Length: 432
Image: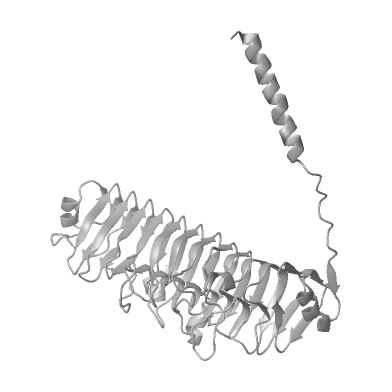
């Protein structure tokens, strides 16, 4: 067959293909925009939310109802003007009902005077025991909570949630209950926290800590990025009990990226920046900390391998820390001053390309005799302390008992290392 015939066939195929495409195209007009309902009277807000669609608050409007306000209809958006406040007393200021989808809340302040949570998405109880019952597609942007005196500002029991550029300040419970700026509980995920500033006494952000009400489910796909987690230093003098800055008790595929954590002292706990400690049937898999900065804390990270109260322990913890700058301040914050405490034999712990300045007696303390499959510390810059890396009570990286099945310590720049450690791990750069 000559080239002219081949080209003719190709042209015919092109013409036929375009004709098929033309048949498949239907003239679908874009949907008519739905007019935004502007609430000028607070008594109209709940009815507007129940009707659904886009709702805006008139500039300067404050809406406060004893039972708060509920999103009961899918495809509902509430927009403030930046000078609005929505409040509740015996219920959250705003709540998203089970099964509701595609909700947006933006640019307003929230207040709850006599309830645990200021904003609650979904339920952490028997009303939500399936993934289908969890709300889905909730976006909260530019929402602020100042001075909450209860358990938490944002409670997330939902799927496909984004919390963007929100702000929680001065959150704690006067009766010394645990308090969080963000709590992710009975949530299938994914959940995104992007940007924002978060202050709370017990944990600024916590995932898990209570048994999932949805069987065979756990928070999965948690991304926390570009956010600040801190505590008010005046709480130290005032005796407000604090625990840590960011805690995971359950969660798979968790990324903590480019976040700042600061100001945590020995109080109700030892003042760690991160606590990765599975409980209540939780497990931690594929937890990644990337390019974060932690300072002015009693310790950097506490890791445990599994929930020792579980009848059948779930898969063991996996944590990796890549990059970032980590600095303790034991003198001012108390605590151990160590970079990392490891217990109950996690599966793998990796630290790469991190800058670490600690004032504890060891960089890493593997504090019990549970086996660790992999401990990898490479390409980091750190100071030694008295004992460097302690393994099951032995100092200077002594792994003669084989408790750590694969131990890799190479390519680091280490200041002040003991001669025994230098001999054991020669593939590092040592500074006096």
